Length: 291
Image (cartoon, rainbow, N blue to C red; front, side):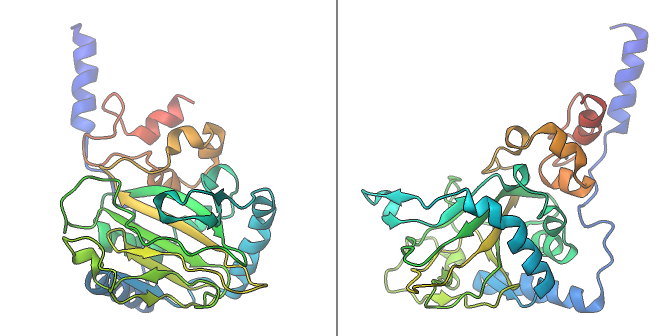
């Protein structure tokens, strides 16, 4: 190795450091800190928590307006044979949401939201997938499932996945409020058919957060005229594969325009001083200098 190349290599190695926490620059108010601590404790004990009035009515209206054209272009899905236990008329799903709208960029890095995520998952976490959903009248009940079931890890285990649902409409038992089985994130057994189910009835603007090990599912929309829109931002620890491939799904020109914190949350960040880097460099710095 040439002397100058060796010197450059040594500089790179010496410059390697642990990445900053995504919450490092946050200064939460006493009220918001209390909200975060309460939610994290409830998730630890019950497996889920509801944060009332997470969004203002004005912000809810803004999100509805921005997402309406995208919902309009996406039809209901139908499943004839009932594979995976979800037969019939399905919820409208809009995956890869960051490629389709800028409306959720700042929402995704809300200080309360990412502080709760750090409290549940630890300092190294990332966005797994962002989806908008709209179960309309007649949408069928979803089978109860675990969102961390994609990872073959013995149960019970430390939280690997933490999911959120931001209600853009009121969630009621009649229109299919999300069902969750309390404390099921602590189980090392299969779902008990007789287990108690909690209905997450919420007002528009409320936030539901749950451990990905909790058995849960969307309820049947029994109404004739109510939709149940939501934004689902799902997170996982940074050393696991994301559900949505953010690096391919979101165009580079879109990534460039995002806030830096969101870029890092999407995966343009190191997990520790080594994993996730490129040529011993911070991946976001490498991205900016090579695109």
